[in-house]
Length: 156
Image 1 (cartoon, rainbow, N blue to C red):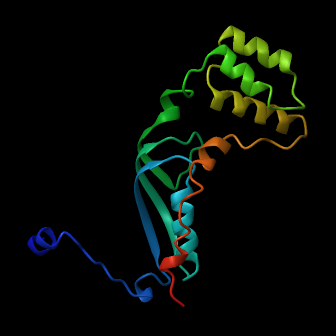
Image 2: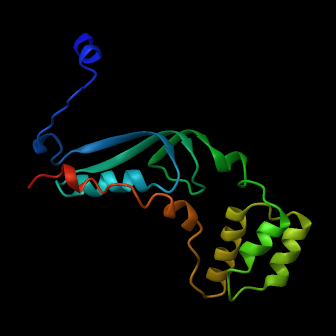
């Protein structure tokens, strides 16, 4: 550690054999859409390995998984960030094939208070009525488009 502190640089080298045909536990500070874990798992799959369990401190995804353990899950306690009626109505206008009057009433009554909650209910309605559900986390995923695929670490 003294050498690292003095040099201000730490270089860690691993050969590809360190990753082949092994199961891994992924530890991260937070989990939202799962993009980071998926990217790492895709890299590991190329060498016959996989992530078998994920541990996070903060879980911001509303879908539960027995393979993901968190100290705190946001959706156990919240329905999303409260939005104004105008913001919710503007979001509602983006979707076709739904009974907007039903959703208007829920918003006005305060039964729907967040965009994520609105999107989930729209998706559930569409699926129940034989339509294709919507991607509830589109906006979250768009923010992660810059993430690496970890291909630059894979040496053939």
